[in-house]
Length: 493
View: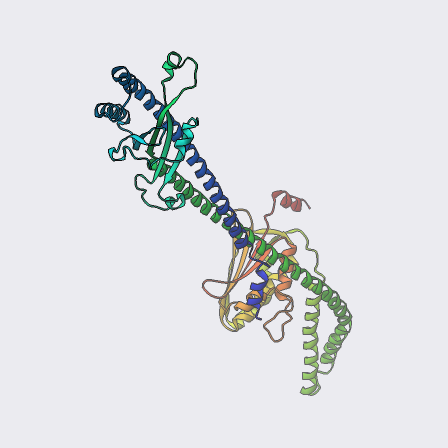
């Protein structure tokens, strides 16, 4: 498995928290929404039905009163008895009932006698029929105050998905007793039970009311779905955000653990290297001084001896520099806090490197104001700048240019940039250049930039490596803001 796939696998959580949380929430919200919608719809239907039943009772009672007052009493006084077989009486009853039904959405009105025979109907063809009574008619004759039946040609679930309900799909049948008007009971009955003269059956169309409740239910369902989707996307976004944050924190924790282990290994290595370097330093100094002494003493010797002695001296000097690098990295020195000029330090480094730059054909452009100062250790900063310039010279491998600029940011921090016209950093070396002992040179120790970074860090600054847009390597060093009180304190010293 390569590094990219391994990192990708490590960044993933043991389970996809975002999908699990958001989809479980969606299912729970949908189930609760359906249950709540069904409950609200059932409540609306029950309320609508109760309202229609109350209306039907008022209508039936009003028709009963009108029949008694405008038909039963006048006919009884005029003819002595009611006989609907008489066309004149039937016509009078029809006029009384039709006057009450004007403008109402009623399917039919029927009157039954105690033999369940239709005495009157809004459809004249049904008169005298005995096969149209329902179970509620005997109950009313037995003393039940009223009876209701809901008639539907399709189930309610099918009505919910029917685009347009035809009139007559839902009907309410009300069965009501025909009795003596209550205003005349005391006079006629002398406290006796009210006799049932017949049964009034009213069938009214409730389809428009059902259309309204179904429309309201669909509005509720649509509102729930929209709010559920919005909540789902919000939960999904929050969960993904939380998962992303958790993944980043886990990755950072793994990175910090790796850095901690690396730091522990480097610390152990540094202690070991410092101990070895300290043991090597004294005999190495003896070798260097001895070789230098032999070179001066045997100047007249043959060329072979001189070359061997010079090689011993040069290699001992190079090895001494390497040992010093190891010691500087393993035991960094605490910097002093003096007011130092960045221009002076750069000029000092150029005094040692200027001749080599000139021989190689490297032009150095310095644009650092003389009044830019920082608090720090001039010797350590000199070493840091010297290493950066030496690395730039080696990267150019011939003629080229080096640009040194200073910038004073708005927050008071001082930034110093070193840019060369060389090949710049490769993608692999850019991420590893600050690692100790990493080098692309055959004879390098890999401690040059780490030592520079350690020096800058000890001064409270920061260092960034990048490739310049116009080409070449770009190193930016940022120093912290120097407070006026600190500067005054240094001057007084």
